[in-house]
Amino acid sequence: MRCHVSKHTYHQDQLSYRALHSYVKALVLGFALLTMNAASAQEETDSDVVDTYVGIESPFRVICTSVNFGVWFVPLGDRGGESVVDLFIQSGTTDTDTQVTGAGGDRLAVIADQGYDSPLAGVCNVRGSLADNASTITISFEGTTNQSIQMTPSSHIFAQDLAAAGTGAAMVANLTAPEAGRTSVQITDGEAVFRVVGTLTIPNNITRDNYGAYRGATKATIIVDDGI
Image (cartoon, rainbow, N blue to C red; front, top):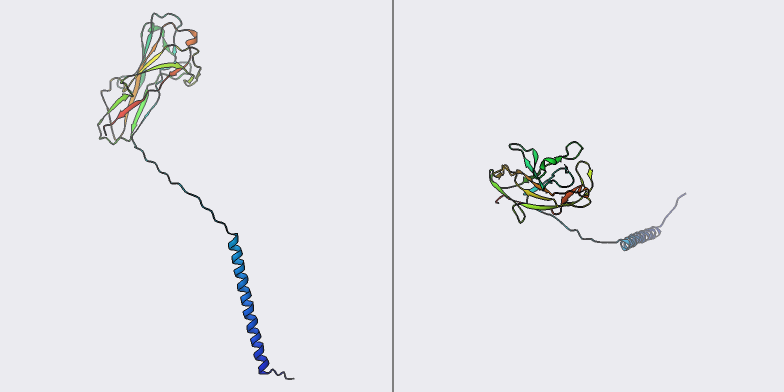
């Protein structure tokens, strides 16, 4: 059996197919554009600012530890006058030592067997100096060459707790730097070390309320100048 398709019918079919193809193509394109527009409508944007920081400082530093006169046995009542505790560095060493002068000095004794810290000079480390080796640094206390500090009741940990004195005795510390025997402090490879020593005056007629811990009412400010 033969099937005959006329040229006219075939041509019409081709036209219909092309029209359908164009229609489908346009429909797909339109749908894609619609989808993109919908997606674009849903997108959000935001912004923020970013700060930038940097800091620079001199490498020249002076870092000091505290001066500790230790804990002392001081008898009650009249000792004949005030006593003076001298905190110093033993000659030719870096070891801290003390001696007591003044009235009743032989009746005072540092407590060394009850767990309290021993007396200790302050240590100042100089770092980052650009001065030449063997350059001498200048050391002073702010405003004075010798810093006088009134001691005031304050709890402190001398390796173990010691409560603040109930009533403050009029004790005064006088600090000096560098330690006695140092004619000069010199820079070596940008560094130097010196110590802060001094005396502590303990008044006469100590009462029970005077017993306890003290600290300086003010802090001493040490100024170091390497000449640069």
